[in-house]
Figure 1 (cartoon, protein in one colour):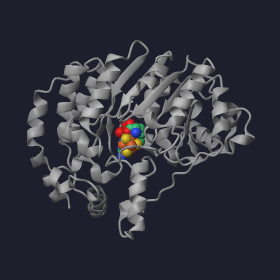
Figure 2: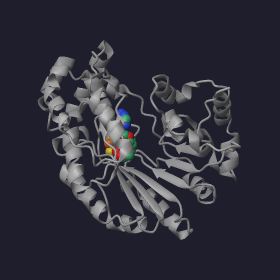
Figure 3: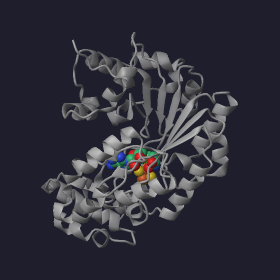
Figure 4: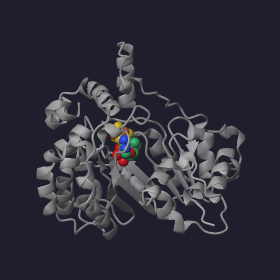
Length: 387
Ligand SMILES: C[S@@+](CC[C@H](N)C(=O)[O-])C[C@H]1O[C@@H](n2cnc3c(N)ncnc32)[C@H](O)[C@@H]1O
Ligand code: SF4
């Protein structure tokens, strides 16, 4: 019988910003973290933690469990999911053993990207709390639950991780990992404990690349940096407010030119209707300045009011002309496939906004325009049609 076994459920541990744990970042919030003080062997806990055991059992019985619905949605629509993309890596016998840790120390961030939320960005959290204090209550964006919470017993958890010999990769995001003191501390600890054979992956907004951090990174065998660069100039500056393109560009080129053999980098733009029109510029920029980097692909599905499919087709005419002559031949093969499928097919999809999305968008605009010099409708006049 077919089964839905998943490599991530046997090898991955996600540690989130709500003192929560899951088997991978696709599972969303997951479960409250255990009291790490009561655990002496993190692999033993990982193999026996009841919610994880239940999910592994459901996968083996071919049950599409609700926690993994993001993968099932892809798969039920005949699209490769993180599970199917890594299925071949699951080896018999299936022994739960942590190989990858995805770690978000906090929501500390210096940006308030329009598609992000208070649980991932302290900047968004601060502004939401300010508006709540000002008595704004009838707004779904501002009312969205803030569940971010401090790590409990972080030092014990880090000791457990540092002493776990099966771990091969640590992925750091947040918040913004490159502005977190805990990240620098962890890198230094790994170096002190001769754990530089571990692969470290960062997901970063590239607003900070300190030479002291680069010096630490150089000591590891393998570093992967996913750069969340959504566009260039005004296309990144609105979506990743209040980022300055020139800062991101300077850091990108600094890392690119000093990356050495152990650091690989990837462009991973987050695609919504706020940056779609700028995607060709980003690809042209990359082709000219850093053509040999990897590429990821990330479409905003939630919040759904940012879905690029909501852009009326008659407003996309120039974009459609532009992509006809867009050269993507310098992208790695796998990325060429993904982006050519997007530019040949998906980009022509359209749907109407629902009434709920219209209201949620109005609420978000209120938040975005508060303390922003550039107002949403001045930047996106066509979006009047969505309201
Ligand atoms: C939450 S961020 C944290 C790391 C870092 N601050 C950054 O922006 O790269 C992790 C990734 O999630 C992406 N992201 C943020 N909001 C998203 C959304 N609503 N849908 C899909 N991806 C999103 C970001 O672009 C980034 O690549
Ligand atoms: S930089 Fe990352 S964490 Fe910060 S607001 Fe943007 S997407 Fe969220």
